[in-house]
Image (tube, rainbow, N blue to C red):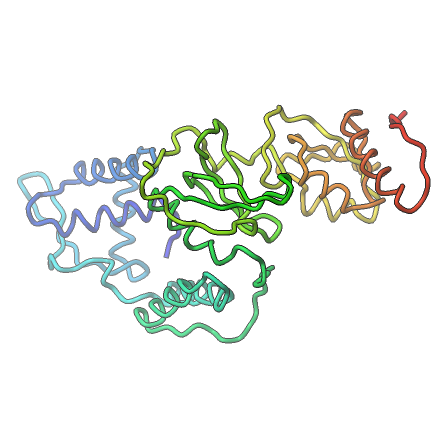
Length: 344
């Protein structure tokens, strides 16, 4: 079956129109209905007459749903409806292609069975297998990076539920920067993100203006603050919130262009797996790339993870920052003279 989102919206809209016996849907009415649905779900319209005819042709075909469509004449015009008003494309058996795709989904979800706070996965898989008479392949052919012993996983499902249901959370949080003391937060949860095999909650904390980031593995306890009204997220677009950073820490500064030189043996690996979506190759012969990001702890960690295979060339301030980290580490093993050096 086609997986295009706009096409799926049009098919569902046409199906609804064809089942409606209270109204007569002429071609222009079908176009209007599809445009209205696309505008509602996607914020875009623009459906042509030709597109609707092609959609109808597909829905009538064996590749589609073999819909029993009538074309009823009304003077010089024609309106469309199902011969059987109880018919719906949503009640038809799966095609072979759909069944194969669904089995792949079940297989993928199956890798999360048994993890703490993932009881919902078992329920979803069981319902899919029962409803569509499918049985997931028990052969283990997919591996995910998982840490089932990570602290905080028991809070994941409740955090997701709270964000979905607009429930405020009262969290006791262990802060390493505060002498190891626990801190109480009232947070309005907006978004959950995984990075480096850890989960992070983003939301508005009472008394703060900025988005706050809390690691789930540092949560000591959590309850729903039913006495606090939820403050909706009207300003932060999390789809693009992390565009300028590596990881989950978003400092209040502007992105800078960082030039990096890689060893010959590492260059193609980094080209095939970019450090950031802004990565560009500056000099292929000398293995120099650039990224445009806001520096943060996660970027430092990633750059340092390459060891001698990566050198920061520019800007001088960030090169000096990385050099200081390396010097401090080097002092643990060998004496070293303090001071940054700029690349000549």
